[in-house]
Image 1 (cartoon, rainbow, N blue to C red):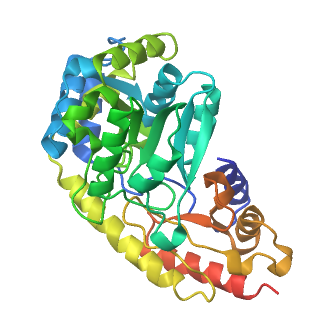
Image 2 (cartoon, rainbow, N blue to C red; image 1 turned 120 degrees about the horizontal axis):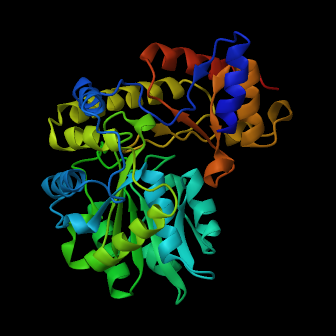
Length: 376
């Protein structure tokens, strides 16, 4: 957000920026979804609803997840939230007490660490290896578990590195959590943007339902970031707690957004496949463009829509001491928006979001390459 704010200032001054900072699709929300919201407004569906969402939206959530992943949830085990972040935030407030440990793989999405700490939990950082594509393994998770472990967070595909937990490791992690009475929080924000194979959800392991919380979002899947449409699937008692907490904070999510979500989830999924195919093309174009920059290395993301290049070869040049300083200078001197790795728990990377045109990728990476190679 700090990067976005600084970029906005430069834009207001007329600076031509190439923006790789935003974590959202560049597509418009599909027409049929927008039409559903307009129809709901025209029908005056603009009043309060029950806190966890109207029955039809919860039905659409559980049926979509069941159809795609073989999960078995009832509508009493689903809650519709104001974005996926609210589902995550409220879940951690309910499950984590002071002193509880929460295992968090590194690099991690910016908000995870702070939300855990806000709940009073202790973050147990699980380092991953860049040489192994930042892959999270069951063996590494098992070694990080202690008697104080209350929860494990898995974000697959991940933000910022696009890492995907393999189906085999996911099943082992689910079993570990279930057998040790640990909650597994599955952030599935990018679950449909998996380029390594068929999307997989830990929610498909129905025998472990008691210890699984699926945290979902329509933002990336359907290009609905500003709609704030998310959900959680969890045991009935946890959903009841989520509903109670939500009732004392935001109450129901926006009424007509619920109607739009029903159409998104229950309608044609062609747009999802189309989005995924274009994201994959853009990823490949971004990787090919970055490969032309000497000294810059980058893992190949298997999902989501970010690349996470290693810029360590340029730390120390031109007086740059940190990734944050490099990102700041990229913004002001090369007019390219990037997010420094410090936000995600590493110090030798920047995150570039590639849902832009191929022309912008070409121009933006040209600017980055020119800036870096001119550093002395």
